[in-house]
Length: 453
Image 1: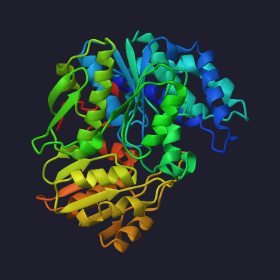
Image 2 (image 1 turned 135 degrees about the vertical axis):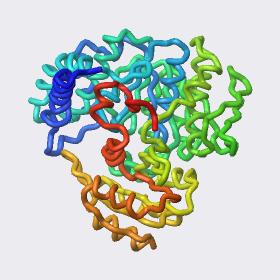
Image 3 (image 1 turned 180 degrees about the horizontal axis):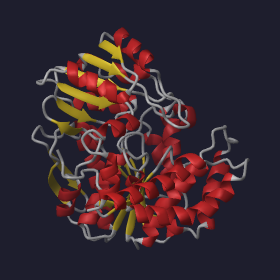
Image 4 (image 1 turned 135 degrees about the horizontal axis):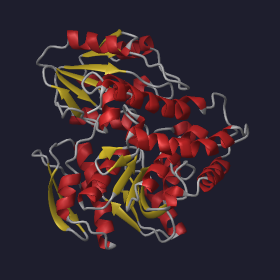
């Protein structure tokens, strides 16, 4: 427990660290576009720090949908197997410390501050180069996790790719396994307008001699060709034949573990698909001699994930889900068990609210549109979202302030109905504070301070 004075000091130290990473070195003007130059810059940044990301083996996860959940499942399972495990995800939900997960806890404020102090001189040097083609904020954010993981003497790290894979800032890892989740149309301005172009970017995490486990979905032919070209042993996870049970159980046949009957605690199809990819990845590691057994999967695949189909209140039932592209929203709509639904929704400027809302329009009774203010990021006006909802046949209103939007949504939702908060990771994280205060998440190193609701 922290005294009020200790609490204030720790929170001030936290804010000093993240203000540097998330504001001071964020460049507001466009960078010179050079994908290859971006990779070279990321490698040079790591090298200037002494390549901390090479002090432990890593498993890298890429994909359009599910990569955060798959990262979480794999990390929890490896930790259950007794391996000192770290996990880096992006973006974070409430606290920057979530980016550096260590065996069930988020890094402490002291660990974050030490790592930031180590990274700062290198970041300052790169920030002073006006021609740097890579985001210094992005490189520094990753480097903080690398440094924390090195200090913790990890046995393995699970690294979620940020955008794409081939030209992503996650570079220079000691990869033991690559994992590619389901592919879909997202970030098309950066990755291209077709699934094949997106698959080519994701396939960039493949490496000669390093096994790759990938979901067999659209773009599979590209993954096969790239695996053959670079010499990466590729194993498919056929999600088309996957039939999760209504009882929340998933039955799989794996090469090393054989027949498995896993209790996921939910019958949501997208959770089962993500679990199948994670299980296949862990099976491949077990085949390579890692000390992983089926009981470790039972623990890892049941571990709760904040902001992913998370119930934080019962009457009305309030669900949080970070569905921020059309593929994820469609999967969320298929998983929701609600005939009377209120949705609190916000979107960033890079995504069409119509594409997202269309996927749940038939299930949504009421829409409360709201708007985020994000440093250095464009957002969609609440009025535009509400207008889109009305055009799709949803009873829609605009409330610009997110907390006021939540109050309004609770007020108009019958206690027997459901309320969903979605559309943006940033919205879910901001409003989750009502049930799990962000300051407590930071100080206690968990997304469930005081225990789960």
